[in-house]
Length: 175
Image 1 (tube, rainbow, N blue to C red):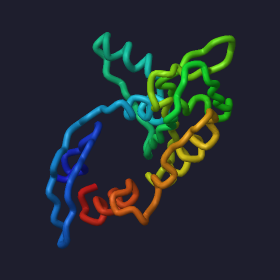
Image 2: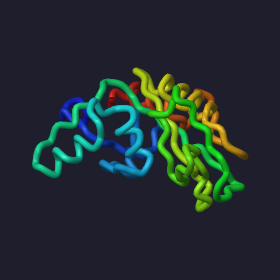
Image 3: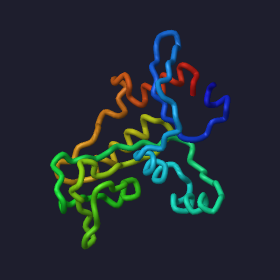
Image 4: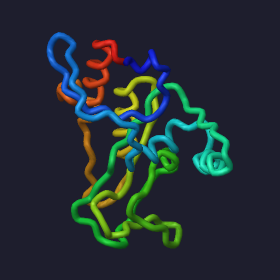
């Protein structure tokens, strides 16, 4: 069934093979809520703070209004991580950055030294491509030694990129 026909609202993780003549073989379809989804939802899409939403859910109320559009996230990594190295996050994007491995000491954000994934940077827009471009731009502003992140997320040249997959699902009238 098409998502719009069943009025589906919620999480979707869809891995599929798309072939000629609009053939689609679903390998996996689930309402997964992965670790990148948490900051993407709470920093980009919810219209209320995540703690308010969680408190309401605990108390039996379910009000999770979300913005219309797309959230995107880009992990910022460091292969040579070491505890105590400084991380600089400009105020401009502070609310779009979610720290995975680090701590605050004397008003300075520092690496925790436990893993290569330092954090995730998010953005929001009305198209997947624009949201990805915004997330990559925000990732470029987070500064620490040996930082790296994907810079090709928005590429239309990569066959399985998010914009290509989204366009394919639209072309097949699935979305």
